[in-house]
Structure formats: C-alpha cells, structure tokens
Image 1 (tube, rainbow, N blue to C red):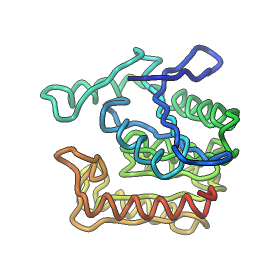
Image 2: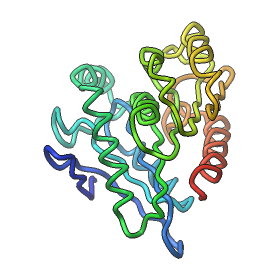
Image 3: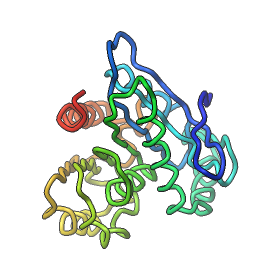
Image 4: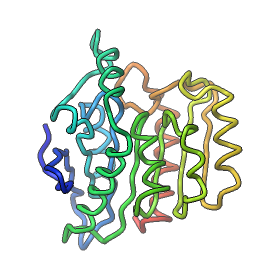
Length: 233
C-alpha cells in the first residue's frame, strides 16, 4: 500500500502519501512516523485522517534499511514479538536522518506551503522528538513516544514547538519516566505536554483494541490546534 518514494541520498525509501481534498492553494504538510509495526492499516488510517484535516501527509517506511515493506499488525498473534525484534535492528540515528529527508521531500512539493511538521506514534514519537532536536521541521508531535528519556541530554537543542501526548498508565512511560520528561522538557519554551489519566499505550490507534476514542479525539483536537498555531493549518 506504499504509493510514493523518498530520496535519502543512499537509496529510495517507500512511503504512503495522502493528499488533502478541496484545498485551494499550497497546504502545510506532516510526516506521520510509524509505530514499531510499520506503515500498516492503522498508520494509513491516521495519515488519511490528517489529510482530511487539510494536510499533505507522508508516512515513510522507516524499516526500509532493514527490509522494505515490513508491515505488521498488533491484532495478529506473533506480530508484536516480530515488531519488537525488528525494532531492535533499527539504527535510530539513521532513521532520524530519513525523517529529515521526508521533511525536505515535502518542502520540495509544489503543493506544499513550506510548513512541515512531524507527528509520531510509539517508536515514531521518539523520532518526532529527535526531529525537534536534530531536524528542521517547523513543529513536532509525539504520541506515547517510547525512549525519549534516553535522549533528554539533547533537549536544549529544541528550538521549535513540541507537543507530547502521554498515557497516564502506559507501561512504556511509567511514572519515573513521566517525571524525567517533565524535569527535562518542562522548562523549555514551546513544549506542551498532556498526560491522559487512566489511559494506556496506543490509545490513539483508531479502530484497534487499544483505542480509547475519547482520549484519541481529545489528543487529536489538541494536535489540530497545535498545527493551526505552528503551521497555519
């Protein structure tokens, strides 16, 4: 279901692209950064959602350096273990460079206004943070990002707006991690963090067993307002 290619300098990375409809003139764009399961049906649904909101959307296959086209499903037996094993083989630094290639690709599109954000989920939430501290995106959103606490030493490099959504009972971001994120990111201007009480991991995975519709819609409303402020959506 990948329908586009992004040049990275060392090869072409597959991606799923969704274009907004009924939009006149150039539109802002967002790079949707995948969970550990790849660009699967849930990530494509997220991409389609933001295209419906008026954004050009690109969801890259960030496992392409391991094997192009890996697509796993959290609702299928055995796929979770396979996803976690695949994630172990990812070079996060190279993946962050691939995200930056996606930002440049979108800015080079004639349909794009030049304003580009990232929005990542789980693994992608970490990469959205790294985009903020290493890349050139205009704004970055992390939904239940995993592992950000390991990169807080780079937080002082964050110069563009950052929005974080965290499940209050997410085992991947337990209370000590939440406190570390608050201590490391709270003092930085432009960082907005929301913790969703009694809410677990992957609560914005629409249509999945983990989906928490009320929290997903609240988080997406906050993200849309964030995009309106930072991208001119």
